[in-house]
Image 1 (tube, rainbow, N blue to C red):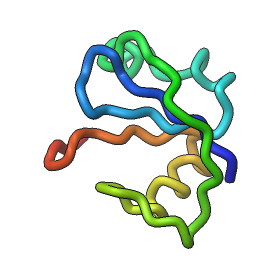
Image 2: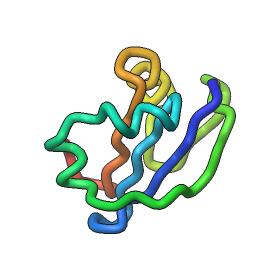
Image 3: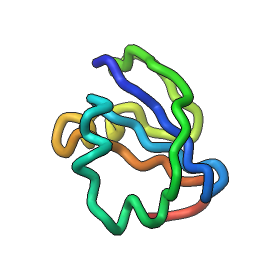
Image 4: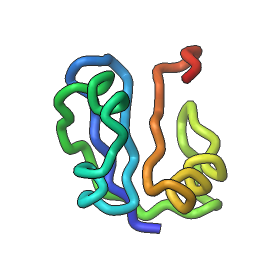
Length: 79
């Protein structure tokens, strides 16, 4: 799956993974408030064989398929 990753300028080590960058406009308002301004970080092809640091690849893919986005919080922090 082709993904776009954005970093929060407000919250250190917090990233938003998107299936489609157009989904930025449809994010829940509460999430937008927490993240603040976002900066584009990278585009990546993600599949179950790819290992991610600090994230379960299957969970990221599941969130992207179900809701179009995945929130990556700093290590040790829970949503």
